[in-house]
Amino acid sequence: MSETEFEAVIGLETHVQLNTKSKMFSWSGAGYQKASPNTLVDPVSMALPGTLPVVNKRAVESAIAIGLALNCEIAEVTKFDRKQYTYPDLMKGYQISQYDEPICIDGWIDLPTETPHRVGINRVHMEEDVARLIHIDSPTGGVMHSLLDINRAGVPLMEIVTEPDMRTPDQVEAYITTLQSIIRYLGVGTANMEEGSFRCDANISVRPAGSTELGEKVEVKNMNRVRAVREAVEHEIERQIAAIKRGERIVQETRGWMDGEKYTVTQRSKEDAHDYRYFPEPDIPPLHIGRNWVADIQSQMPELPLAKKQRFIGSWGLSDYDASLLVDSLSSAEYFEAVMKTVGGESESDQASFAKETANWLNGEMARLMHENDVPSIQETRVEPTALAVLVRKFQKREINNNSAKRVFGEMFDNGADPEEVIERLGLASVGDADELAPIIDEVLASNPSAVEDYRSGKTNAIRFLMGQVMKATRGRADAQSVMRLLGEAMDG
Ligand code: ADP
Ligand code: MG
Image 1: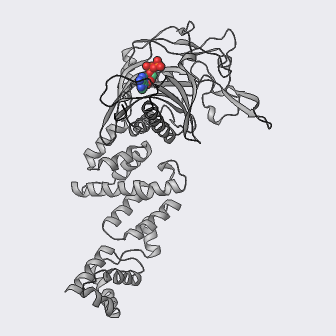
Image 2: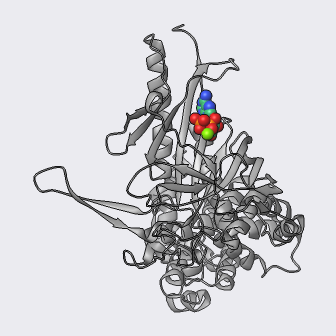
Image 3: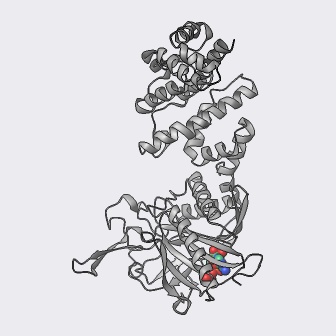
């Protein structure tokens, strides 16, 4: 079937750490990222005999909020199960997880891809994170010894499992970034792949295009950047298609992504797949989730990214693209709204063009300078929303030109400067009106007769040179569009 076109089928399993104060089943702090090793420990997370787990109510509320945001059904009764495996990072010898009665089932997430795509959510279940092993290499090769940091043991972890509904690496990337932004909007986690608070395993199979049967799947692990998930998926699709074309069969297995080398390697095959011997956790009674509780959580849900995006488009006429960039992080969406608070009384079309210009500045210069200066959140910049509003209005009225506006914005960004003060101090108010520009243009035309001659004989490019001369004479303050128009009028007339 060498001529057959192939289609990929992808399902993701994502672990999301919650940012609760305490652990999933015990009282020590869950904020392990900033703690010294083995300082967030208690008898339960150390798995001492005789200790009993107590469910963290806040973690259950976060799980319900995630379920509601993902359009899931919230179970009326949910229970915990023991998943047994032996590895030194799991001191009890089992992990408390959920097997056949997870807290949330049957939801979906709409991806903001060019062609919108809905991905089914199979389930969201609660479990606990494991301890961290740090392997110390021997100078002569191999591992000399391993260190154990218990801080992470027992940190609440949600696993979100999709249906095999994705077909392309673009959809995979959109799923991850959409889920990350939902988690952050809900305020239940940092959803950061690099710091390990968001971990993604990808299940991938391929099949002849048009087929409705599922092919044998391979699970790929070990990706710790969004980019790496995308690359691993792309690579695995290619590897499977190539193998099938060679006449090989895909075998169900787990492969690990080698981020440096950009390929996957076999970790374990189906034959040595774990038998986790799940059974109901005897130390935690089943949890009954009252509908009042769910309604309460529902009533406290923040506006989610998709709804916010649609509101921005509806109220301000923003493009889908601009609105998507703005709602990507809650802080930039809130910042945009703070700038838009300065609007009042203008016509609808003026409001829309102000919104569009504000979005341009936020998604353009602001994003660029934040990136360049490693500023993680717009709230940490020194630019006040009201100050940006002033700059945008002046720029829209062409009271300053594009280059000057960028310069003013640079000062606002660096030291929280007031735009009017910077414009005044640097003398950047544009020389824009015809009265002011006319004598300068006359002067430039008079002293550059050959360029004028060129222009009139059809080498219209000469106007660029003349424009440069006007810019020089105004020390760059002239509005380029006005200059172009006035030069043309003077020479054509
Ligand atoms: P397992 O029993 O191996 O854990 P599941 O049916 O629970 O498999 O699915 C685990 C993940 O793999 C889910 O995200 C699911 O969507 C995805 N998946 C299942 N079958 C396939 C397949 N044939 N191709 C791609 N992904 C799949
Ligand atoms: Mg499964």
